[in-house]
Image (cartoon, rainbow, N blue to C red):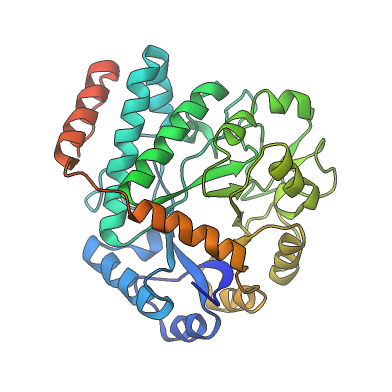
Length: 344
């Protein structure tokens, strides 16, 4: 990871093409994020991950969005279809103790699927608190409307991933649940006062402030910064660090989303100027990827150390030979309490 650009990029297909190989060799991104377009089957995906690591090094970051529910890049038959987070929120109403255990099992098993392939970072869990305004882009990706339930279950999701050897990315800091529009398409604006948000939406991110990586929300919070969305706001960056006490690594959501304005270069410049650590560019279009990487900064040494410490910590965890029993336990819990059937 040393001398890598502080940008993670998408790629176009099932293997690296000649242009991508040339671009990745020249600019050395910190890692690659994978999407459904990059996955045919497990064998092909392992080959692709090995090809990427052959270029960028074995310690490069390989990311994926594997939340469960509708946001799951790896699906059957390559991987079980895990429940949406909303299912565990419903379970928490019946028993918070059982729900915490089920979430841990879910994310341990999910993480084990990823690490077997060579994927070491999961853009999950969502810590967004749903409300009456929540757009369907979040919807059942949230655990609950209760920030305390979100905090408790979110922590267990992170623990399950880390115990399996995968780094979690909590998202979308400081919260996406209050947004009534889709940030993929336009810039959501939240008008609620900070005092209200600090006692609702922001709680899970403050509770989980020790998690290694957090992804920003492309949302304009008028009471934090009336001009810039979180991802491009120095004021918001300071707020996250001082008021939410977040000391980990801050990564942007995809900078190609329409919530942000300007061209790729200006977006990258504004995000760096705001003090964020890593930039995510997902399109996989070779020309745009090269522009993004060309404007990427070399990874800061302090961020490199934080990343390496986090990776070393999870890699030293003794993995238990418990996958079979964990699968049985999770299936039994979901069937008994929710009459929900899952095939693991």
